[in-house]
Length: 491
Image (cartoon, rainbow, N blue to C red; front, side, top):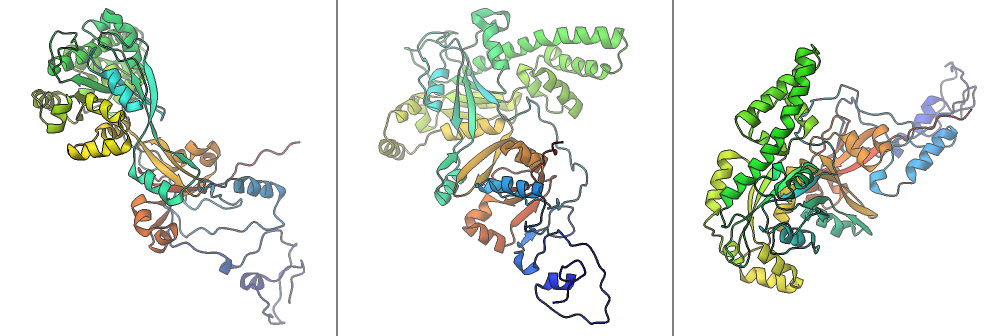
């Protein structure tokens, strides 16, 4: 076999993987012995995938062979230590396929606290069924009694988010570790008129609402002489207005000191940097105090205004869902004398907000039955539990979604905010995944279920390689490829 002066086979032989004599009159360029790994293109199994955005060609998975640096071997050992599919490693030396082309389209900001450990609070007047709902939702035993302020300190629990996609992946892979997405739910004590001024322990309860990121507004829509109503009668629309007004008045108390402070610095003090914030706060004051409307009822806040709203996190800016607590009889027959009035009020004042009827009495009865008894009872009465719908809606109201990592070791749903890009989604698994992000290999759940396997998805050309500007979609099945950050050499 002809060799270069450095001892390696000529490049043509490296590429072909076998000896082909070259013409004797061809002069070979000498070089030092190469320490770079050699490879045969036939050893590369190209995937039938689309090229990542901004990439001119498909990336190759290079083989780590003897002769690579010690740091490279350590990186390879570290990346291979992940046995889960989420750790399908990017081999050291690989380059990121997508070219850097900026951060892509900036998503519209979301009103609310940034993060994924968000909470939704159960809010309403006393004795409307909040603790009963919390108990059936979380399968806990929080105090639920027939007197006001039965709950003083908030009860908090995590509720798994029901999802047929997650169940399918668990059945398919049968892994020892199964971790669904969770919704954090808080049971907050009942509010009464004057809560903003401290009535009925109102200040403490309003601070509990402030710590939440969304609201389940629970309304009593059933008559029961054995259960007292704090207002003396059942009138759900009146109850809605009481809660909204208490939250708005608490925001009003917050807004005026903020404006006074900004006016002193930005207007009288001439601080031009704070002048835009002062102007935005004046607009918020006009809406909340002068118009007497919650922040959430205004739908045209721009990006800068949303930044200011997120700085102060007003109570009336939190997303709200209306849960209508019916009697078991009304829920099964799908009729209630207050339901239409509630829907009309919400459509007029809070358009787009969800109104979900449920029956705390029915859910409590179902919880005490065995699985077979529960199924039989639901079939006989041609009804179903409302809890799965409520949990999913609450999760979505917090602007949360999740992607899956799935394999024989683990099936897991990873919670992210809507609009999260691939590197930040990878960072939810491990910070090194985000720092060394190369690409995300993505399957849509529907494609995986239809094809029946990852190989079938690849064969159909639906297995995608996505770059750092890819916005993760709910239900994506993702394998991340990344470079392990190298530790600085010790002197």
